[in-house]
Length: 233
Length: 119
Image (cartoon, rainbow over all chains, first blue to last red; front, side):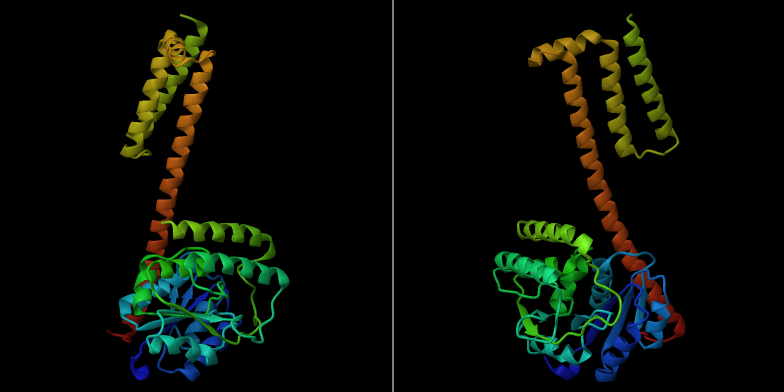
């Protein structure tokens, strides 16, 4: 596929991200003026919608909060209906660098993979995180590796590009609340190819992870169960 | 007629009237109303005929007849709750879908009104 002709939709799920989202959108549009930046405003109570619009993004405002999965899926449904060739999910908190977009899009462009995950762990990159979080990710990553029969490291990374076929699949079937890990299994079950590429990530500019320490045990149990259920579906 | 029989009969009749009222006022959908009418009928039959419980329990080998009542009652309650959680899950899925569609349509309408982004 020719790089000039690829229609790319950048999907940014946002819940109360007015402080960081302007910069994120501007930097993406500066580097890639031909991309569509779509912000899915997941029922924010702050000025996320106005800020995103003023930065030049398309904004879909959901009338009520659906959670990250429901918000991202809205973007995929939009991209599927509009016939985009590729979609990239980018976090609104500035964690994912727009300079790295080419790295996750390149394998899609070349047709080498159907889904590309921008990973913090494939090679040594500048990203630091807490020991607890790293342990959690290692456990989930080994579960995914086991059930997807492909070694994957940064399974919770929200920085991911998908091609047309996977967009269409996600538009119909995507987990609502903690979708990052699940969706890898879904993709593998449909025999799509996943590629993990190393990317640099920023520390968060603002906001915090949707996974706080109190919820993390619940998160781990739920996601593990979900992985196994998806595998035997 | 024993006192206890009057009490149970009154209770089951009250339940029946309540269910019928709810159906009449359309607070209950048809698919669930049948289920509840069925429950009412069973309870009414057992309260009218006390011997029935004893004979059924003896037939199934229960030494203490009321334990059959508890077993059946609790099992039915659990199944009903399970069914309701299935219903709730399905509803939740539909609400998500509707919310997404509504968001997309609002966006498209806004673009249309601005006269931009015509396909």
